Every structure is written in C-alpha cells, then in structure tokens.
Length: 367
Image 1 (tube, rainbow, N blue to C red):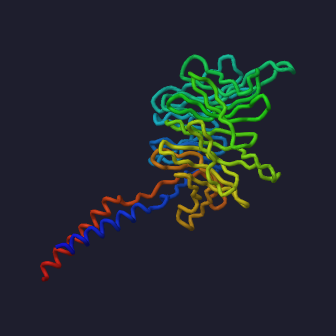
Image 2: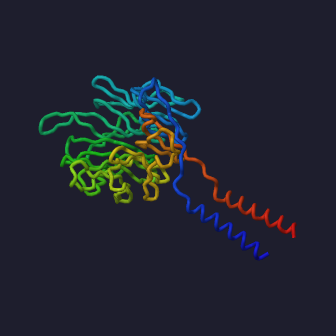
Image 3: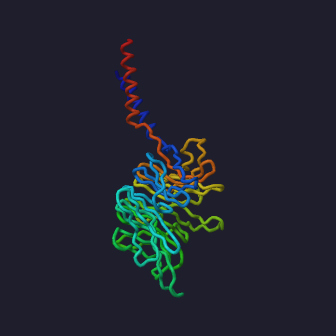
C-alpha cells in the first residue's frame, strides 16, 4: 500500500514539473486572403477574432465564418473594437477623415470642426478615437500647417492634444487609446525631437522620455496602463544603426525589451502583458513577441514548410491571437496566428493518475 502511494505521488510530481517547464505556445498560421490579388496588411484584431486591414487601396474585415470581405468605404482599416466597430481612413485631394463603421448602426464620421482633416488610429470599446488632426499654427515664419495628436469621445468636437514643445505648433500623433481614455503617441518638443507621450483629460500630456537617445515613440497601451513602443538608446556609433530598441513603460519607468542588440519595435500589448512587434536582422525583418521579458521569433513557433516568412506582428488580442503581415511564397500577405491548444495540466495529471490506478487495480487482481 505504501509503495502504491509513493508511485502515485511520483507520477503527480512528474506531471506537474513537466507542465511548469512548458515553453512558449505554438501557432497555426492562417492566410487572411486578398482582394483582387493585391498585397494585404492586417492592422488589428479584437477579442472576437475579427481582423481588419487593407488590401491594395481597399479596407477589409475578416472573420473565420466569412473570410475576407471588402468594407463599404475606406482605403484602409486601422482598428476594430469588441463591438465590431471598425475605424477606417478616407482621403481625397486636400482632405482626409476617420469613419466608424458599425454592423448595427449608421456610419459615424469623426467631426472635423475647424480643422483641415481628422483621421483615427485606434478606437476603444467605448467608441472613442485617438488619431491626428491637421491645423494651422502661427510660427516665427507666419502661418504654417501642423499635425497634432487628437482624442474624440463621441462629442461634437475633437480635442487637440497639442504637443510637447510648449509652443504654438510643432507635431503630434495619437497612436492608441485604452478603455480609460488614456491616449499614447509621440510629439515634437521645442528641440525638434520627437518623444513618446501619454495624455489623459485630468492631467494633460506627459513626456515619457527615452532610453537615452534623442527620440521615442509610443504605439499602444493596455487597460492597466502599460505602454509599449520604440526608442533610440543613445548609441550612435554606427551611422547605419540608430540604436532603436523596443521598450515597456510603466510606473514612470521605461525599460528596454530584449532584442539581441538589434533594432526592434513593440507594436501592441494585450491585457496579459504579452507584447508583439518586429525585429530587424541583417537580411530581413522578423515578427516577434515578448513575454516575461523574453523575446521569441514567431517564425520559430509555426510549422516548417508553410511558405510563410512572418515579418511584422501588429496586434494581439486577449486570447493570444496575433495579426500582422509577411511573405507567403514571396507575396505580401496578412496573417493570423492562432494559438495551438495545449492539454490542461490538471487533465494530464488526472489521466496519468487514472492510468496508474488502473494498473494497480489489475495488478492486485493478478496476485
């Protein structure tokens, strides 16, 4: 009896140790298709698994039930929220605008008001938008055109977030907004260098600093306020290498993400703090992810022989699905990475213990 208990305990510990040593998830790769054979880029995916992007000069939406479909309007789709509202970009001679397409409501044009043009980069689950606006500012040279970051909360007017210069003018771009209406992006300072920023309605715009270099850019923020992007690190010894590294910012601290000493961008972060982006190698660009501080080349997590070269990962949802763009047999195509399910540790443990119990029971009968 004691020997049997020891055997059961040994099996349980073995299974638990094997589970605790599990590595990064593997993925199946899905080609999102193309409209009229054009190059395709996926830009965003929501928690329903709906992906959006552009194919040629046409915005598209994709889901597993219907595949790729052209949207009724828009030359590109930049974002989709969990209500399946899609943010698209339209432009013409001298104008551009952001439009929200909803499956259950009329289209909503982000108001331009007094500004030349307004375009959106991201939409949160409240239907609020971060992006850019075109305006005129007064400088030492007279009246000049300028681009500022903007935020729109569904009201009559957009909010001009200004820039980091403290002057009238310069430049700013809003790249993302979370469900707390915190906007991140990058803006020009008085010294003409761009720095990453975050903005909220209570405290205004804040400079995130850099990793030691001249410039930084913020690309995404999750619900907990973790911000990702890229920053120059201050090593300008190589004229062909600006020393641009991916970073994670939280609690007033910008930390460099491991990129094996290569140029890298962090493009998106989900609410589990898994980050995706891209890294430059000597000969190519590779789609990568970061989890718990460790970087993984996503090409190493798909089956060999698929014909895919995953180049840029642009978004990740809370289910771990990743979208981006790469080369499929040499053609630029959009991809979706679907995590391959792994058996539950508890299920594996239960199965193992069941097998041992079956063995012990039959061993007793044979005695």
